[in-house]
Each structure stands twice: as structure tokens, then as C-alpha cells.
Image (cartoon, rainbow, N blue to C red; front, side, top):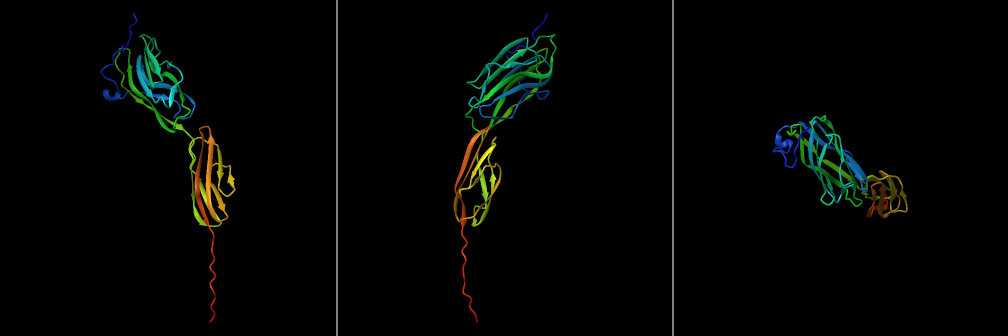
Length: 253
């Protein structure tokens, strides 16, 4: 007679590797750590646990940044589920719940994919880091005993294009050579420089420009690409002065 190896309606006394005091296994999200706005990204939840027959997971994410594409996770083969107790995604709350068991003598999992999930990045997401974190992890062997495990949260960087630059020097006498440094960030492949003196450049990266006439110049940089577009304007950023020559009389004695 096949007996279920894990009852997960109530959690074992030990809830984590930290509480157990040993780290015998790990569990993590395998996938990209960078993404663009409006991009769909895929992850496998993986473990290196051996002798695994049951698993209970609770994960959370920021629903303002990420939304799960489906209402359930795609089941994996570690363990191969004979019984799925919970498999739910709540995009409003930003939570995932997944509890499955295998029955002995089904061969145990000795490392592999627990489940898979796809996320869609919000088209209005702010650039920076967001996390998908494990709030609860319980792994169990064929006897229902917990396998101590550590979980590794996912840190995902959302790439948003931001235009920025600096110039050196910003003041001096004509003709003045200014070295512009492109400080823009994000994924971009198109650039437009306007140096404010009826000249510019369509090249990305650092630029050198000579200001031949005295005056104050407003410089603008526009960048665009897969992670969006942005521009930076610095008003009267470059100030070029005119040389004044002082003629002194020569006194002969």
C-alpha cells in the first residue's frame, strides 16, 4: 500500500535551515537578473536537495512591478507530484503558493526543477531592484522528516533608460575643447547630442567638442533603446569667454 509521505496542512516544528542549524540543500530561482519594462521573463524554481518527496513553498513579489502570466505555476519533476495540495498565484497580493507530494515508492527527487513561472514586467515600472523572495520553504523526505534547506531570493534589476552627461571643463577661453562623458544608464542604442552651437553628434558614448565662439551654450543629450528613452538638458552649461589683449605702451629711454 502506498502511503503519503508528507502532510503539509500544518508545518513541521522546524521551518527553515536557519532554525535547523544545518544547510543540507538549497532552493533558488533560475533565470535573468535584469529585465526591461513590458518584458516577459521566465524562471525555474530549482533545488539541489536529494531524497525529496514533498515540498511547500510560499513566495512573494511586488505586484506593482511584476505580474505572473498564469494563475498557477507549471509543475516540475522535483518532486514529481502525485498530489498537488496548493498551486495558486495571487497577482493582487503578489504571492505564490505551491505544495506537492510524491508517494513512496515513486523515485525520489535528487535535484532539479520544482516548478516554473513567467512574469510580465510593468510597462511603467521604475528602474531599480525588485525582489522575488521565499517566505516559507519546507522540504521533506519519504518519512515526512524535514530536509534543512536555505533559500536564495531573486534580486531583479529593472532597466530603464536615463540620460545624463558631464563636461570638462565647463568654462574657459575660446576656442574651448570640452570632453563630454556619457553617464546615461539602461539599454539604449540611439543617441543625439546637441551642443547648443548649431552642431551635434549622433554617436553614443563620450564626445569631444570645440566651442570656437564666446558665449553660453545649453547642451542636450537624448538617448533611446529597448528600455525606453530620455533626455537631459543642461542650460548655459558651457561658458566660453573671449580673450582680451592689453596693449601697453613701450617707453624708450
